Image (cartoon, rainbow, N blue to C red; front, side):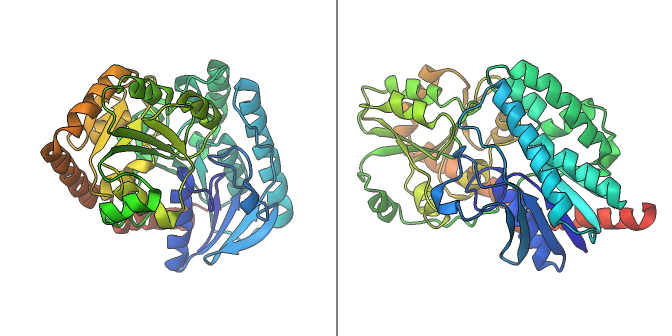
Length: 410
């Protein structure tokens, strides 16, 4: 089958949704489908196009056998209500423009991935024009995300995004959601349950257990320090200022070192907040080749979310964390999607309480047996629920159902 995947996050972006869209397209290609990807410039989580990827400008290319068509667009260095709307509008306009000039009409189905509203709207229009099935993967929802993220002007964005997103959700022949909480939200927006398939994000990265001492040496960290590592995006919804405040409460524990590793629109602010502090640092993201070593160097892996993040998608880092055989601590909203996902396999702390987070880190630093137990439970959970083979098989089955739908209805 000839499949068009539309997503604004794709290789070589190193984190977030791009990990899953890239793996999906390549796994479908391996199974004999002909996949083309309509996408954006690589911009996340840096909110700029890094110099090393400047050659990936507008135009066509290939990566691991998958055809790519990129559209240029506005990349705002920061986010507020106006810039978010300009960003989405720029994506919509340019994806639509490029689809008219560089895409043929020889596709059997269209799959779009949101939260970027533009991808859903452009995908729906192309599918309708060609009279082919339209599948939608809901990794996140911009409407709910804007409302919960603390972004300035988020309420305005939320209302607009809800209206536009609703058009894509209701226009899809079949939808994938990545968590039970997301399923409930989509049903609440009026999408028939019969159209919804839940496929939990699987571990699209291969995570190896690297010797801890060798890993520490690689990054220049002392073997006796207790390393707490947060990886991935540094944005509003991660609320990493909470982690900085937790570090301030750890002054009496000099062996505890917190490393915030990644990029994002809050990176500069976090660097300023951490300047001169001995127990917390902001470090650049590492390559895929070094990611396993980074996780192996940790004594504790950290997830942190804003206290309002109740219905968002699950952080992509979790799939790697749980496979790494390292214990996980999560400062997330009680009863939210991430809390429910990690209950029983991670140390959970209420979001937005830096003192409680500091206390939990201190206690775990003195409890090696508990850390070993958490690491074991996390790995067992990953083996049972996050297998890439199982996840890819579920997506292939979903695509086959879209193929059958196309034969019966179009």
